[in-house]
Amino acid sequence: MTRMRTVDAAALILEKEGATQTFGLPGAAINPFYSAMKKHGGIRHVLARHVEAASHMAEGYTRTEAGNIGVCVGTSGPAGTDMITGLYSASADSIPILAITGQAPVAKLHKEDFQAVDIQAVAQPVTKWAVTVLEPAQVPGAFQKAFQVMRSGRPGPVLLDLPLDVQLAEIEFDIDTYEPLPVATPAATRAQVEHALEMLNSAERPLIVAGGGVINADASDLLVEFAETLGVPVVPTLMGWGTIPDDHPLAAGMVGLQTAHRYGNATMLASDFVLGIGNRWANRHTGGLDTYREGRTFVHVDVEPTQIGRVFAPDYGIVSDARAALEVFVEVAREWRQQGRLADRGEWSRECQDRKAELLRKTDFDVAPIKPQRVYQEMNRAFGPDTRYVSTIGLSQIQAAQMLHVYRPRHWINAGQAGPLGWTVPAAIGVATADPESTVVAVSGDYDFQFLVEELAVGAQFSIPFVHVLINNAYLGLIRQAQRGFDMDYCVQLSFDNINAPELAGYGVDHVKVVEGLGCKALRVFESEGIFDALEQAKKLVAEHRVPVVVEVVVERVTNVSMGTEIDAVNEFEALAESGADAPTAVAGRS
View 1 (cartoon, one colour):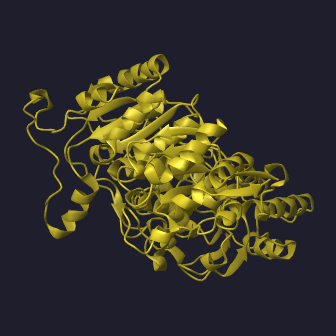
View 2 (tube, one colour):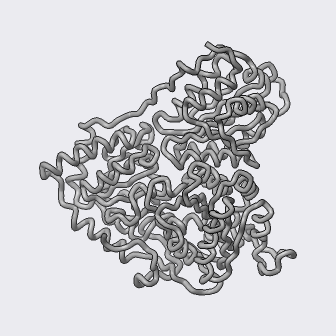
View 3 (cartoon, rainbow, N blue to C red):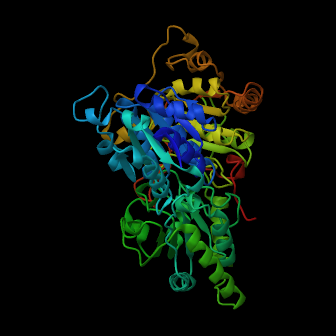
């Protein structure tokens, strides 16, 4: 056994658990932990400009590669409260991140000491576990439990709060004999899988809905094999986008009120059976439950027992990790195929592909000002299947989901349930930190961009390269569209005449100057024919300078984006594609 400070033990545990990338800001109450990271030498750190941003960076880092756990670090008081939005985002989307905060000394916790707040109580609703560690000897066990909790069952974030005196205290600790705790992973039984497969096999028009749990479980390969063995089309959720390549013949498109495809909704409405794996029946996916469920039988597989029946009662439920379930589903499906027991799905699959070829939205607009649909068309041309897209909320995210293409798991990284404005820039930094050689492309509107724009300086300082496509309509576009129901356009305009940039003609903030002032590169586009060239130039600038490069596309002020309140009643405000020429980059037709 070796005598050491608790924070030195913590640094060794981070290394042993494989969590060696941190994002954060030092401060007086967390300086001992920072001294331990410095002494260790193997814990990497990115200095954020805002602690909320550090938490989003940690989430982006976790999402990029299976097994990653991002760590965000901050001092006492406001640093912890700043993390709450990031913890909520991670919790809502089942993403494990570890938050570490400093705290006032134990003896002063009840004395209203400077920056002392009960962060354990504050963080509990948005974490799987939050604890202020009061005894130095408990620090190793707290870190050990934190990793077990984050990884077990439905993944999620944990917050460890370390009082200053607890960090400085010395304990006996032996890292050589330290072992991570076993992770609890519920697994489907063969009997459960056979029952579910019998239900699917007896249906005429079955679908598989693949949720984010498939990606979290690193099971996309099994999902595709299962679908191919059965010949059953797959509908990915927004969080599950990438589980099956968009150009796969069994990829049926996304379903929902906003982030969905016309052909995806039509296929769902034509189906009679749905097997949901690792999904949560989110309301933006289902819309009204009567419409979504009518005429369909549902089987739900999820790692969290209380998720079964939370939104509606399925006809059959299985509590299981997605990978554990799919391993059995694939095994049984192979056996049944060899025995000739599987129904032929050829005609149903062809019907789905026909809809995929016919029910498209128009993107090929050549007008001024630029229509945002054209932006996504040019992004499809400029960025290949290895691109990792990052987005959070707003009309830009909705249209990106309707018109971009994703071909691999963890290549659409999106704040699904929480959707906090400002998430995109720091999350993209986390993604590019995890995979610096890949093409990372952030997509956002101007308001999301402005929320945490200072984090671009982090990308410049630490040479973290990515392309950020900024779609500028000088509006809170999604809120403006929602206000149509109240017959108002109130407090949503970001436009003003910038006395320093009259060339913006009322579009307000000069994003190019802001970006350049933060040490990055920026391009601005006013005409449709310039979009592709700007994106190509951005890729070259990223490679040359290894900093974030922003491509600002100034688009029309008002665009009403396809959405509705029921999956059979989505309002199409713009012209639809009448032929393939109207949507030249769509993934359509039979393979």
